[in-house]
Image 1 (cartoon, helix red, strand yellow):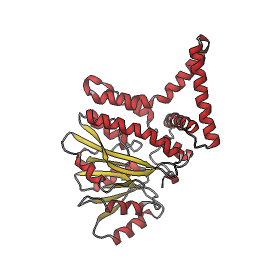
Image 2 (cartoon, one colour):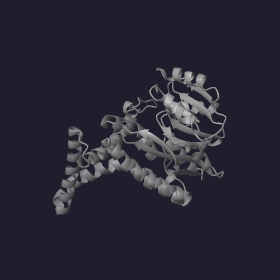
Image 3 (cartoon, one colour):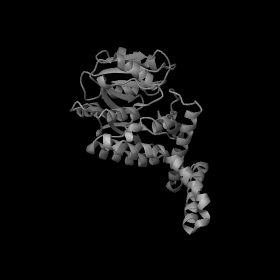
Image 4 (cartoon, helix red, strand yellow):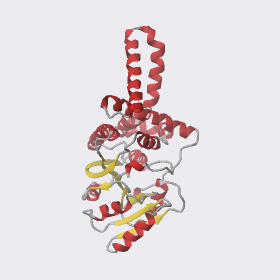
Length: 336
């Protein structure tokens, strides 16, 4: 098992305690340390000393190049046939690892992701909105997995065979790249709803926005590269799922801009366009009121949350064009 960690002194001991309680034998645990400069390594080494019966080691990356690089270097020293990945702040249910591994029943299964559940602390609005979106996301994955292969995973709980692991671009993320390459290789990426991890969503709008921007740091690359993924005659269900689940979603913010601008030019063409213009403006006003008032009312927070997702796509595209996208990032403290 590979646990990604960068300055995780707040949660790393809790994570290790969580994993050693797993219902899975002969587990090799590697902390993929991305050159932490806090007490993360010190805490890990103390934990290892106090638990000699477990196979736990810290693998510190050669340089601070981000999560994907730390994972690459950790996998190189891993000895297992199947590698389970997780983040330091994601807590597994006791049988989660066993559930992930149980899905590798055929050679064509290259990747399995579990179900990430966001914890509700006092019904924080961002958590409620995230869970509403996430419930739909997981339902889509369940359907895709039953039919053929999923178009996307998550970075908190997943696994792959070591022989299928690739050293990806350091700015890329496994949750997008692994299902993509499985599909392109005519293999399968599956979703197991019974492999469960629990994580705190960002408790503040600022933290959630930062997280969403980070997730979109390769949005333009994801849209315009590997276009063969959309060849439905060659890739069948995978091409269909990827277009509907990922490609259209990557284009969502740009569609909104196009629709808004087009609506301005069409506003004199009839009452229909006047109503749609009013509807769009009202929606964004509600989002702005939600931001300014910090209200937990759903009528304000859901428009705000959706608008933040769209702004994150635009910000992600801008960062990539301007060369500001990077492999490293600062974690959201409210998720710890």
